Length: 301
Ligand code: MF3
Ligand code: CO
Ligand code: CO
Image (spheres, rainbow, N blue to C red):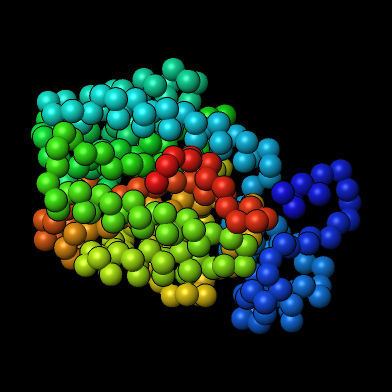
C-alpha cells in the first residue's frame, strides 16, 4: 500500500499507481498525466480535505479483514440454519451470539435507534428489516446484513438466502442482484470512478427488466459504519470521485423485480418496494488496491 511510505519519514512523494490517461484524482477533469502526475500531491490529505474520505493503511485493512471474517462466519451460520419455520428473531439471536462470542460488537444494535443486531429483510422488504416473530416460509427470499465491530473496525456484508425451494421470480431477482454485485466489484480499480460502479450495475439490472433502488447506497466503511464516499448503484461512466488505493467502501446493490420506488413501514426502518415486488441484495466491503481491488468480506459470487 502506497500510504505506508509515510511512516517514519518527514517528507515523501505520493506516487499513485493509476493509468496516466485516467481522470486526475484531484477532480480537475483533466487526465492524470496532464495534471497532478507532474506535481507532488499528498492524496491522502487531499481526499480527506476535499471528500472527507479517510484512506486506510495496511494495518487498518488487516483489522477490517478480521472483522470481515467474523461477518462471514455469521452468514455461514445463518445459511446452515435457514429453513421454513424459523423466525427472523432466531436469525438475530444466532448472529448476535456469534459476533459477541468472537469478541466483536454488532454495529446495528442501537445504531440510530435500530433495536436489533442484524438486518433481516424478507421478499418485498428491500433493507433494514427488523428481526421479529415472523416465521419464514418455503419460497421466501431473505437478506441478512451483518456488520461486526472488532477493535473499533467495521466490516459490512450481506447475502440473500432462499428458504427451501423458491419460485422462478425469486430465483431471478436473487441471481440478478448477485450478478449486479459482481459487475460492480469488477469496475473497482485505481483510475476508475464511483460512477463506473453504478453504471455497470444499473446497465445490467435494467437489461434484465429489473430496477435499482436509489434511496440507499454503498458507503465508505472501516473506521465508522457509514463514511464518505457514497457509492450509488446507478450512474454514469467516468463520473464521480476517482478511485485510488486505500479507499474502502461497500457495494450493496438493492435490486427490485418491479419498480424502483420504495416505502418505509410504520416501524420507521423497514424499506419495502412500493409495488410489492420482490427485492434482493448482496453486499461486500471492498478495498481499492494498486492493481484493482480486494474484497475484505470475500465470498463466491
Ligand atoms: N448494514 C446496512 C448497510 O449496509 C446498514 C444498516 S443500518 C441499521 O449499510 F441500523 F439498520 F442497522
Ligand atoms: Co453497507
Ligand atoms: Co450492510
